[in-house]
Length: 217
Image (cartoon, rainbow, N blue to C red; front, side):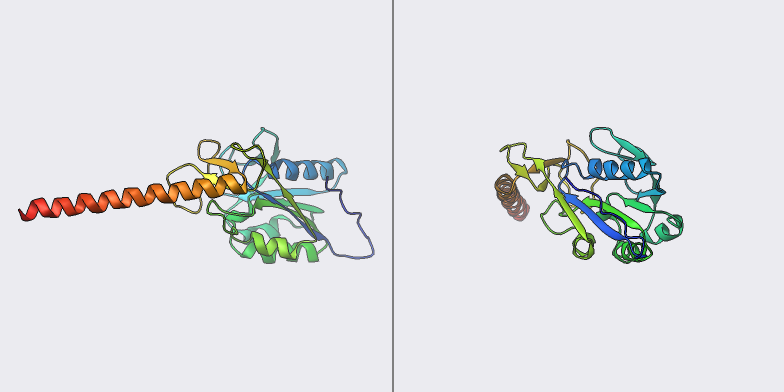
């Protein structure tokens, strides 16, 4: 379990903590736990999330098991510094949805003495590094990778397999749209999807050829 760093009052610098993992791995749950501990210690805390994330609530940061904490939705990372003025701790959920400006914002806040806690998906549904998360992980003092349980193998899951038929990079969803899978299960599922798509494309090609042939005759 992550243990909070002790504050060195002689140094006017904060730090960055990153909580990353797949869907349903407990990222937001861990973020809320750390922020509530800071609030209990009477530290001034502000929480931010991208305005696009309205799955559970417009303003609350809500985990999959309904644990929640009030937040401020922002349309862009550039809005955070002004709103975070005077804070001891800043929490940021769903950081993968922000643009690369979030990297500078987090580092600027930490350099001003603020403890910054960031949670987000480290990989998108294709298994690629997601948005600004790799850079945030690289510049953070502390990185915690949490895991879900694979729904097919029971092993640790680090991939977010998309069940919905969409190629959009950003697709908000829950259990109907995503499934946490282990490496083996994810690889097999992606291979199965690729073969299925090849069959669909072949069928469409044959259908188009038949249509042209009938039209010519």
